[in-house]
Length: 282
Ligand SMILES: Cc1cc2nc3c(=O)[nH]c(=O)nc-3n(C[C@H](O)[C@H](O)[C@H](O)COP(=O)(O)OP(=O)(O)OC[C@H]3O[C@@H](n4cnc5c(N)ncnc54)[C@H](O)[C@@H]3O)c2cc1C
Image (cartoon, rainbow, N blue to C red):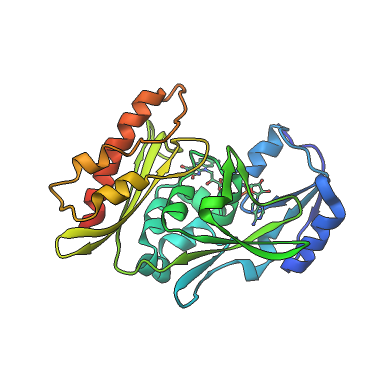
């Protein structure tokens, strides 16, 4: 199908984008990589009068060292994240998760910020960002505010980014030297997660000193498996099964043609054990 007609604007600064959004009100929609928005427009599930393309705002692209954190511009495409030296050194979990998103074409167009604001519970970026305890920078008519990842995801396809606001940056505290793995269960390749587990661990000797675990598609938002994180402390590689069996605790997974809720709960435990085991290997 063809979208309804709309005006197209491509501002070159965040301030310019904000004033276009303020002027257009409810009739505007922000365009990042278009990998979720364009299908929505083509199916006429949304019919904005104005599309505000962020693609020419250079300030929203790239990864920089922020001292105790790395800062990722919202318009940084997936493909730039996967091989970025700062991301691989300090937030390996994010690189591992992004490697699994769709196919190379989508990874060249899709952006990390677009994925976060789209907030698909089956999307692969939310769980690592949550597990890594990122802070998200949001700007709007009232100025700039920062939102903890734990507050950012509000419901299915809903975040704390309001009308007229933009997500500009994702700040991830450095997890230097932490091992990481993203275990994604799919029926066919290049698809959204049926369930996935994001795990990153810091080792002391041969056992786990700290663990962070995020769950994809186990509820209407990405979730943290805090009971597993706590149970893993002090455990060695041969000692993971019991701690990981609590992965589905407190979750509310969907039932659909890919699997019912009980099956997803089972998957969460299995994938958590695999993810932690691989994370311990580096
Ligand atoms: C065939 C296919 C397979 C896919 N497979 C996967 C997969 O395996 N895993 C996965 O995680 N995803 C998958 N996706 C989704 C993909 O990752 C999208 O790129 C992502 O969901 C959206 O990013 P985008 O940059 O394209 O955003 P867009 O589609 O441009 O925008 C998405 C939404 O976010 C809003 N928005 C975007 N940027 C901002 C911003 N900076 N501030 C405020 N609002 C903003 C837009 O208005 C829109 O509502 C797939 C998509 C397709 C088409």
